[in-house]
Structures are given as structure tokens and as C-alpha cells.
Length: 243
Ligand code: UDP
Image 1 (tube, rainbow, N blue to C red):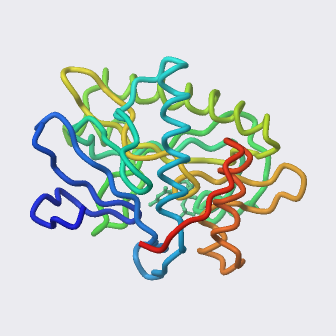
Image 2 (image 1 turned 30 degrees about the horizontal axis):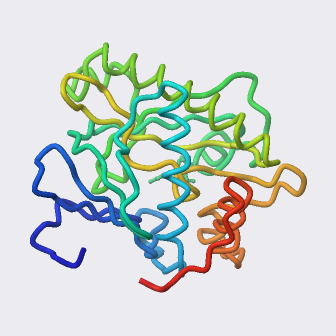
Image 3 (image 1 turned 90 degrees about the vertical axis):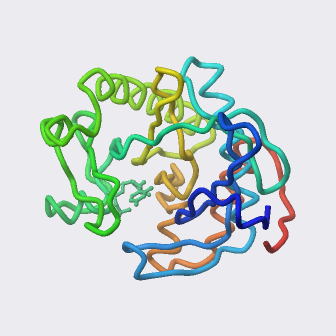
């Protein structure tokens, strides 16, 4: 996967490569990580391998439970084959409990209970720090149709229910997460990733984060958090390699 000529795009935690089939792409999961809009950078050794396996688990489960997504199959320890979608430039955040930017915005501490699920939309525009927008902004800017937005919201709530239940079974609380969607052959598919890079997962007993917040907040043992999620999900005790 070092053939840089095939690189389509490079994100915070992944690279996307073209394949001979224009309808498919290869995701390469990296150890690199960024936080605070790129101001903090680092490397979590083995994260790429762990996230590749966690995403395989999540996407397979979501397919089985009726959430159409881009995942085709895992190729090797750091790569998976996916459908090559056209990413809708709007992210969906689903929140069950107050944390992160919401805590700052509304002046409530992390862990504050929410009476209902909160859905937020952000523009995928890193130069503007991914601004928070509402549905009328999205349609006014022509970024997605009302039907697409409705589908994204419907699928996001279903992901919340399915992943929330799965995590509860392994004593992990799903605090919030970010999803991305893409267009593929006239359908909206869940794309990107569902992993500790994009979800807040807290241990249900200790309320300790087991996700990227360990890196953001310098809590240490970042890879241990990721490894713990994978282990509780699959029983897999992975010995990872550097990339
Ligand atoms: N998130 C993400 N990518 C981003 C920003 C946020 O995956 O660029 C995830 C984040 O890990 C959390 C959820 O979206 O699970 C809500 O994040 P929040 O808005 O609180 O922002 P943050 O505190 O992560 O900046």
C-alpha cells in the first residue's frame, strides 16, 4: 500500500487508495493521530491494526442488522476493501451524554445526563474547523437533499441503538460518536469508520475513557484503551506491529 500514486485522500487516521475497480477503494488504517483540528499530533503504536479489526467487527454487525455501509471485507492487518462512495460533506454527531465540545458550548460538565438523544451536523471543512450547522444550512448550501438528510439521521439513530446495545453488553458506555455517509449507486451508505477514533467509549464502572480522549487529554495508555475495546468485543488479544 505504499504506491502513493494510487492515493485518493489522507485523513486523520486513514489513507484511502484507488483500486483497479473504480467502484472500490482500499482503506489503510494508520497509527498517526491528530486532535484539536491538527494542533496536537502523535502516534499510537498499533492503533491502525486495532481500528481495522474494530471497524470490521462494527461494519459486519451493522450490515447484519440492516445498516447499509461501505465495508466489503478486511484484506490484511491494516487494510480493508470498501465501496468507493462520494462522501457527503456533512458529518453527523450523535450524543447520549454530554462531553467534549458540547460540554464547552453549553457550560455543563462531561457526564451530564441528556433527556433525549442529541443530533448535530457539522460541515466537513477542516479549514473552517468543521463548523456546526443546522438542516436549513445544509439544504441552502446544496450539500445534501432533505431525503438524504432524513436517511442519514435515520441510520445514525439505528447505529446508536445497535452499537450502544453491543457496548452495554461488554460494560462500555457509548457517550457520543461521529459518522460520515456517502452516495453509492443512488443509495446513502454509512462510510468512514466506527472506532475509538470517532466514538467516545467509557468503561461503565469507572467512567474512564477508552478512546481517543486518552490521547487528547494526555491520560496515558492510549493503545491499551483501544486494545481493551477490541478484546471485549472479539476476545482478540492482538500483538500489533509498528507501521
Ligand atoms: N469526533 C470525530 N472527529 C472530529 C470531531 C469529533 O470523530 O473531527 C467525534 C469525537 O471523537 C466524539 C464525537 O465526535 O466521539 C463528538 O465530538 P465533539 O464534538 O465533542 O468534539 P471533540 O471534543 O472531539 O472536539
